[in-house]
Image (cartoon, rainbow, N blue to C red; front, side, top):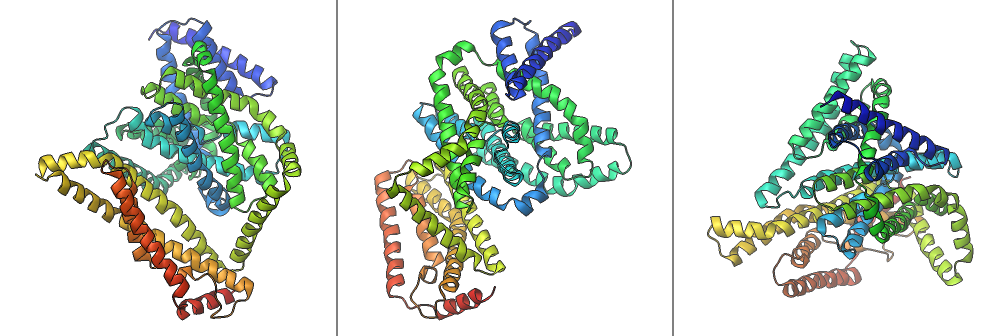
Length: 583
């Protein structure tokens, strides 16, 4: 590469980006908007030599690696364990709903499956830097509430990293054949397990050992070398370099020289991050943006409406203050850095076209520009809506909130051990539902290839092959279904014990005895069968749906009969009394 070309290209790019970021800062916009604006201007009005694209691409990749590394270093795992429970509840509630909203919106806009999933992943996160800058300047939330928002955005980042690792092979047109998909899943699982076991328990100790024998500069060089090593390892596993960089940031954050490495890397991050966002802007054509202006505002509208609604509901479910929840929800209505990262990778992989890409970038820019306005008036909007809400609707909402309050009062009436069991049971139910969804998605795509393989290599006919696949699906689903039902039973028992204590019920008093009549094995088997028969797999859907309705209906009637006519279990009542009596 010609050094004159390198120097001249860097001069134009950095000076323009610095100038525009200063201008944006003066008018109270994030510097990130200036970097993107520089890239858009260069792509549409400034003609650079063709070789300059190679310069931008190289420094853009470096910027992505350092950006993800610094995001990873901001994650404080001990802090997440101690004060992150409420933030975790909000995130686990709103993140899947945002992905689902993006997927449905993508299908409605005419996108294919991969593009729709990418849209869901793109709009699921928020920008920590933009949100913090706006909140600190306006002072509308206390420090504690801002800290909760930071934890929510950190968990969103983790969720987007996981989604990006799963989307990488799909965006690049990866094969969905049985053998290739199974190998890919095993590779991703092994890579993640190694990073979170060896990485978190071994590598920080090695870094600490060298830190005691070297200065800050040398240990920072060692960590940067490890950063590029793990990024390279991620590419060998079929993942993005961003995944390896993010995981290395988490690993370094768990070591002693974290602050030294941060101070060493920050200047580099500022330079190369600017190059990354310049490269993102250089992919935006003003003509394409104008042609897709309606889609830009549709994506922006979907993001703002569903982000506000899901985060607010997450706060409500987590027993948070309604007004604070609404303001916090609006404060997250700026698309995060991962929106640009996922969109850029999808474009580079050929999964999306320039119109899709320009629409996403345009929507992200509008969200950043509009955030100060939205947050400034969010409190007034909530107060006005509360005051002018129709009495009928207001009373219904108050009744629902009252039930929530009673639920939490009953939960707080339990001893600490019972509350812990309840929390663990709820999270177990959540993750088992996700596991069931993932298993069925895999079987949805693997059924036909597996049938063809069985027919070709094992000499089976189509009927026998389909029966074997359905049986395998049933066996694999058995564990999460049984675990799900067992944890539901625990949750119901704990709630019953809390209600009994709160209402001073006596043994033998009629109450909610669903936990007593539940047979986890029967219900798990019925759920297993119902899932298999109702998930689309290419067989006769009406016949399978009819069987599923009959099976599930029979089990529901059986449980209802036991609930109405069965005798209360004395042993369960005794446990409830014993548990409720402790405080």
